Each structure stands twice: as C-alpha cells, then as structure tokens.
Image (cartoon, rainbow, N blue to C red; front, side, top):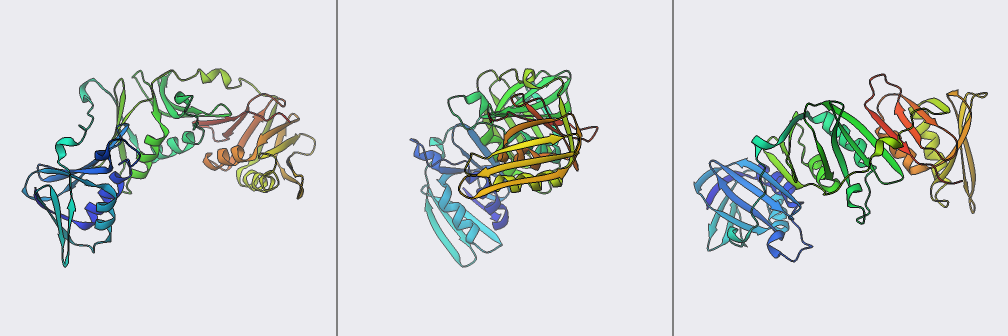
Length: 366
C-alpha cells in the first residue's frame, strides 16, 4: 500500500474512529485501526465488536493495500504533524509515514487478522433520512434518561419505535422517562439503540452535515453522516410498555418561565446535596407561585419562590438534578409542570402548541 492524503483529513478521521478502538479486550487486534484503500479513497475503520466506526477520505493511491496499526499511537502522531500532505507506505507490515521533515515507522499487523466489518442489506432494511438538528435534539432529549444498570440492558438504550404513524424515541431509567416524537413513518420499527452508540454518532456529526441516513435491520442499525458510517448492534429484548406511565390528567398545573424555574431549582439544589438532591416543590393557586424548599442539616436551608400561573394546589418532592436536566432539554421559554399529589408521576413539557417532547419524573417519598 502506498498513498498520499492531507494531514487535516487523516487526523480528523483517526480521531473519530479511534474512540471506538478498544483497549479493554482479550483481542489485541481491536486496539488497532484498519487502513484499506477503496478506489480513490482510504477507508479508516475500528470496531469493538459492538460498534464499528468507518470514515472515508480522499487519497492519491499509488499502490492499493491494507494494514492495521495501533490506534492511539497513530492518532496522536498524525494530529501532531503540521498541516500538509502525508505519505503512507507499507513495507513488510510496517507503516512508513512521511510528512515534510517528519518521518516515522509504526509496526503494523496484517489486515487479515482484523474482524470483518459489519454490513447491512439496504434493500431489506427500514430507512430514514433525518435532519441533523432534529436528530441531535431528539437524542439529547432522550439519552439523559437512559439507565447505566447493566442488569437491565433494555433500559441502557433509547427505544426507537413507530406508533400511530409516527416515529418516537423513548428512554427510562425507572425514576424518569422521556419521549420525543421525531417524524411521520409508514414503517413498523421497534429497536433499542445503545446509549454509547448514540453518543458516538453525536460526536461524529460534523458542522456541514445536513442529514443523517439511518438503516435498521433485525439486529443492527447503521448511521451514515457524509463520509462517516457507524454500525451498531441493537439491544436484544422488549422495552417496557411505558405509555401506561404517562398520566391522562393531573390535579395541579404550573405554567412557569423556564429561566426562572432553572434558577430556583439550581439554588435549591445547592442545599439538597446532603439529602440526595431532595427538594420539595409547593404550588400555590392563591399566591400564584411555585416555591422550592431544601434542607442541608449541617449548613442550613433554603426556600426560593417564583411567580407562576397555577391551577390547583399541591406539593411534591423531587430530585433536583432530575428537574435541572429535564429543564435543560425542554424547548421554548415557558414550562408546563403538572402533577397529582405526592406519589404520582410529574410531567414536564413545553407550553409550545407543537411540542413533540415530554419528560416524566417520579417523586421521592418525602
């Protein structure tokens, strides 16, 4: 293999792909990145057997070929080079790299030992093209409520599914739940995508990407962003029937300015660190206000109050971090915060008429 590429393109591709290369594995080859010529392009790929990440960059190919090289070393070396052209040449399974006055040799391993990269049959797959901004927002809004508990794997990802002609994303960790309506669909989809995969896709999105192409088959999902591809296994299992947790109606409704709600929650959270983030929210129809109370037994206590349009009366105790994280991903300037008593699920959503997102938090026993 012999070719020339630009330092900028190679460094960017190695940086993205290198994150997937695994150093916690019984297979040393998975610490390596695969370099393989493909027509007039260079394929740069890595896999940890759960996720495979691949990038194509333009190259001037003098001699085709393939090799795998240690991910961390080559990524850090190429990123340290000055901008300009980089010459890559394989001699006796070693990669000779030359750029201006810099030259080095990195010991490689033949590409035959590298696992075969997964593929998806496009003809038999369910396909979507999603606007990048919509994808980023939907994933950010749902990924925060996924679980890290490996004993319940179906909760460690985001559930992509069709319902009444719409594609939804949902996630829950047992304490909170988020749901986002994304696009209309005529396909039947039911797939749980691992959180790690979605985080990797978010990190791979480049500024000039306008759309993300998504393909589902029975066991895998593929994301294509410009010249980048990520293929991941889906999580096997059935996602819980979460819709039965969404309250049909609530006794108390608070319409409140989002910036005010964020501020009083942050302040209350400072005093709630000792008590597991526990804050008590009291809605007053008479005062037209929402007050937040928190206690730090060693340090003091805090009561913050802010004006709100309140229907009904009520009090509920929630985790301050959960409330802050929910508010951080709600769109719009006003929040509809609804609940029924001290034990029923609390619902947060934007007051925007066309809102596609709702967030549910389970109360703490006060």
